[in-house]
Image (cartoon, rainbow, N blue to C red; front, side, top):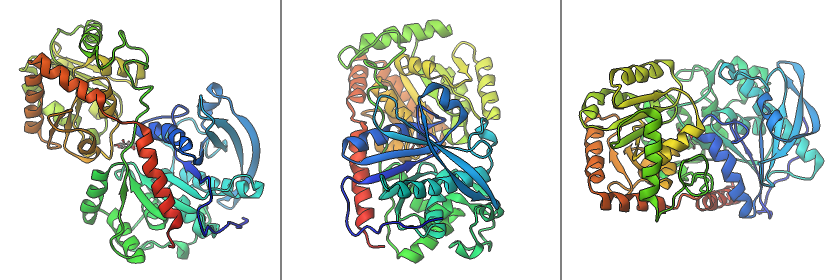
Length: 488
Ligand code: GLC
């Protein structure tokens, strides 16, 4: 592969940042990562960054959003030449360019759940080939590649080792719990030789490939999605395997490197009880009392629940989300005369126990085991409180969305939840995993529910919070600039 990459003595304007990740809303979204990558670039562009996105071309995308085929190139993978086709489009209603990389066998598969690590490595390799292609065109050469999570965490390694590129890289960790582990042989397929790996190659305690670990080693800078989670990452790391990658990085770069924590924003036009969609009655800060009670009446009627304080859980049914804490306390919660509604899907075991709870407490619990954005809007608008019992939460978006709808979060004291919720002012916090803590926080919430004036004020305070992307995007620009001007 050609390797003629300019070295940046000083920052060129506008900065060219190529953002890459596995989910970009609305093209493809499974969780918060998709929301982030679908929104952040729009705010970056407003700040003058020449930002473009590159993502996998899933088959499901093409039908709904216009794309045009612009070129194709070859990538050697597993000693065979594979063709990658580049399609180009934009984020809907914007001028932010999105490139979709397509390869029928290894990228465009329909069932992502069954994807193997080799396929992610292939995508990362395809991105480096794509950067080569961009360079050959001479029209847009990125100053920096912004990778997100383990799916794209091998790009810094591939850029440096396979392409001898000096393009800078930032790796943002959205969730340290997912690292992309697999066999080392997958790297051989990408043509990465043993000696090219900086890791404690194939020696204890590193016994398998860890894509996120490689990103931690090779990226020019690392960030995560809240200052609190950045702190937590540095504290827990000596108990985990991933720690060894951090330690290697520290050894190489000297101690004291800070992992930047930038809180995500939300799209305040979309997640809004005034300009958002699908709710029974739109409302503003001034009309929150009436607006919420009408939406709540509609919701409860739909679900056949009595009119009383209503708590909802919205999200992926994964262990991280702490649904177990709600389930343990269900008996106590039900004695408090309140409704509990679950919406989400995921781990079949967790889904099963949520269904079971709904059966046991038919008067107060409802379980909607599905991923439905329409229903989520209804819950944000119609619930009084949102339960966010996460065992850990790098940033969390739903608590911010709920607040914009005047729905008060009852959440664990962890990660981004701490950075976005003010205990007693815009929500109630409790120790993550603590059943007692959850019940105590619910009791506080019920106390406020019983005092309508205080309840209304608290709802208004929630709605007044600034969770716009513009604030966070400014911090990303500063971070990009500091990476580009640093000498290492
Ligand atoms: C992951 C994290 C979540 C974060 C999201 C976007 O899904 O678990 O906390 O909000 O990424 O950064």
